[in-house]
Image (cartoon, rainbow, N blue to C red):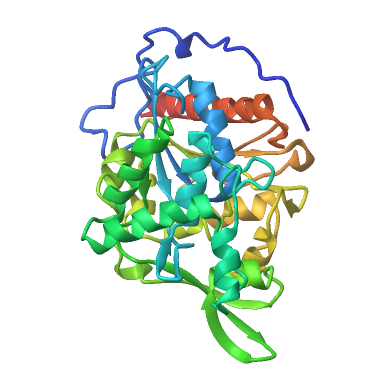
Length: 368
């Protein structure tokens, strides 16, 4: 549902409004702190197409740097914690689909129609690999995209951590946000399935792309997650954040994977956290998040997803008008149109999430 983006009418976004100071004995690392809206710092754990497009709307809503110029029209900042659970090594190349989707989308190089991959892409490399009989055949690398994976793989082989590699790649794309991987350690999402070949674990990408999530999943596991550490800068960004906004990304294999890295979820509990539901009217807006939710025993609904994320984490939850009346104990739920049908609608959604975070942080500051 398209909506016209409203003009900023809240003076907090333009004036040097100072929010309430912490109560005696409190620090910014022990309780959520209201932002100084002359310089609002937002952290967004994101993955996939929905997360990337929401970030584009958030960047527009805050007036932060653009891909073309990196000029800041405000002092607001956005730090993105990118999901790396989807990462996979194929044809000798390390591929980071979610990091690249965010980078390309905000950097102006994404294929807008499909929401992933590069614009003006060719597939000569894919055709040549097929001619050699190379497998897998279900994952197609575009020529332009392959260049990114070659650079990443060479830098990783030279000893650079993924966070440094991502920073170097962003130097070209200038996404207007700080993009951090959730961890420098290798974490891969695997899916336990039971089909014609029996019970086995396969990489998430194989389940998602080759099988279109049609194989019934018994379990979704972040292999290596329990021993992973947050990438440099991640915990500091959360501790300094005025708000954390969960975009309408897959709650299991995107946002869920990020929260699964020890220390990240715990750090976010001490912030003001507002989420945007990826489920509208009992169905995912796009993709197959319902299959992921079924695999972990969560009903596909705006309310159940919020309950799964937890009232200890969430302070606010935006749902679509189709889900008006949703109640989640301990969470402030608001309804509004949530279809990111065009840039103006997406910007308005992002702005509503920020507005709710501002309101809840102020309210908690007053109670503190």
